[in-house]
Length: 494
Image (cartoon, rainbow, N blue to C red; front, side, top):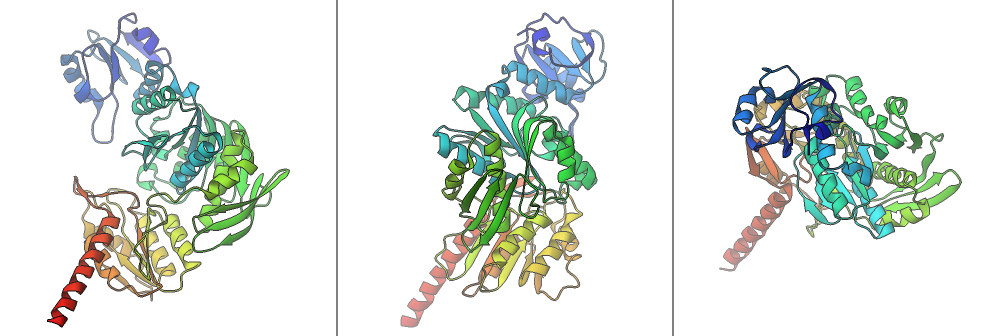
């Protein structure tokens, strides 16, 4: 492919390269550049691709896209945004895969993973065709998983994944769209068939600075969509509505003026039921996941699929057959008289949602065990502590992924939000120890919520990633207790 063809959508400020030269590939990682490739220098959080231009030239890079002018002897193009240039060239390189797919983008602080999975399941169950999914729990083509560590991949990987999904026969793709992805142009240039807004609460303020800036980043999605589904019960919905450039369907539980309203909501320990009122249509809906947040998630899925052209009467039955998602209100099958729930809740609102959902049906005490991630938004730490002690019967504060922060310092910041409480709380730095000690305290009908890690099977301490799965910790501890119990019985017989 010629450089001229590859850069046809790039905003070129100046050019010092032969646009007719042949380019063998696109790269933005200096470690992986191959001879004949176009290297795009991107400023990252810790490194700047512009600092590695000499290295990539030695490796045989044919041309550079840069945000600053280089020595005129170096074949290069100057642009105002290397990130947009990467997204634009990647789309051309993979022959615009997004145009071959109907893409649904879901954004918001909480609910993205659940909503994308509900939409995927509903479309597959209705059409019989496999649907692509890009999200926190991995990338999927039908049932086949392609793991990832980013909620939304970098733009080059994004286009590569979309291309693979198109080649393998997907007509629809559903993706989580994070505020980072929007602000950093990872999804730049993609036209979405439907955009979905769930809600907004404090998160990622270390990156965005303020809630208003966070909301503006989320709202970028709705400038890129033909149709938008907006939760107007949320206080930031006006920002999303103001940004929406396409057709809009609103949904709500409390606001009766919405196009889609959830009424007659009935919540129980293992399911949520409601009546969906859509203009000219009425349908009873059940989802086998407890909590009011599950009703909102179901409404999101109904709104999105309606905007795709499906009928609510054919979508509603599919929601009944959608199983729970790993790490989202996940009940461990322990065969005990108490209950252990794994949930990804890592924001104040998400933590409030899961505890309230449990509170609606719990007969015993509710224990909430959680921590906060290091090198991330510090402002939410005391807020999460406050939510936990206000809604739980006992709280255990521990580590999440401390990363390069001192774990005890993170815990102290959480504790700052619980100092005036009458709710018993304990701080135990080691998460494994915290889980084991709490399990030993549980009585029949009690519920233990293990929050924050969800689907994750690792813990990051310093810069090292260790294997750590809340499920495995629970299972191993209960197994060891059974072994100890058997030993005691044998010794008694002796």
